[in-house]
Length: 102
Image (cartoon, rainbow, N blue to C red; front, side, top):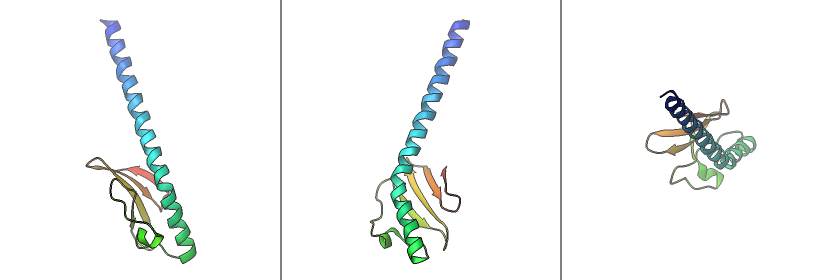
């Protein structure tokens, strides 16, 4: 009985580690996909001294599937986000230069 509990505990721990690994890989994939957009926004900000109102000002089309989506929050702050599934987003906050699962 003790060995079964240990095996089950190890299996649960293994599955948990795999889930964390896969989620981290997914986050890295989304971040890499958003990097060109972030770079274009920052280059636009530097050359125009303002944020673009939308991605069409960058010569891009609005994303249609999961993203990345751009949203200007105010004159100095924007977010880039991906919709994942029905109720989860991965969001980059330009003021903190930080990605957050929401």
